[in-house]
Amino acid sequence: MKIAQLKTIVSKADVDYIFSMARSQWESYVKSLARPEGWTFRFDPSDEGTSLFAQDRVAGIALTIKPYYDNAIDPPEVLFVTRHYALGKGPKFSADFKRDLEEKTKKDLGPGYSVSAAYTKAPPFEEVELIIKRASS
Image (cartoon, rainbow, N blue to C red; front, side):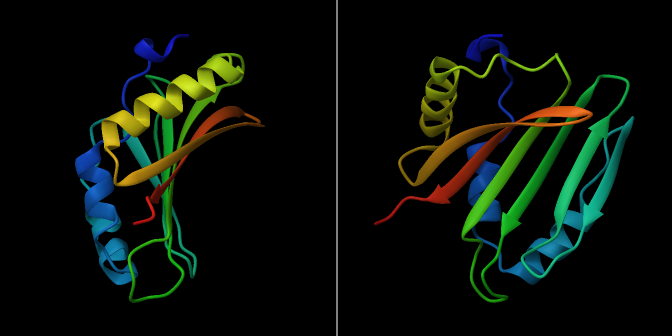
């Protein structure tokens, strides 16, 4: 699977919006999201911010959105966006794929953010995670 075949899993508008929210605003927002037809949502509350696991079993798509809040007042320190694939169905996570994914996402989000990518096997999924931070000024 090439980078061009991956759909953008997070937009600049979404990232900007999430990084503008205090934890209480995120908690209200994430629970009010409209559920597209066929999708199921699962929330995992924590002191660092609730994560959202969203899945469309028919299409075989799943993702997790998890902002990490250091406190209740400030915007998140980090945003984790994870795309889950059925085992054996994910992209080959080579050094070239990682570099290309990071470069594409950095280009999409602009200079205000730093991005790194990671790969994990966590049955029943294999996962590609984007770790997004505000770039240092």
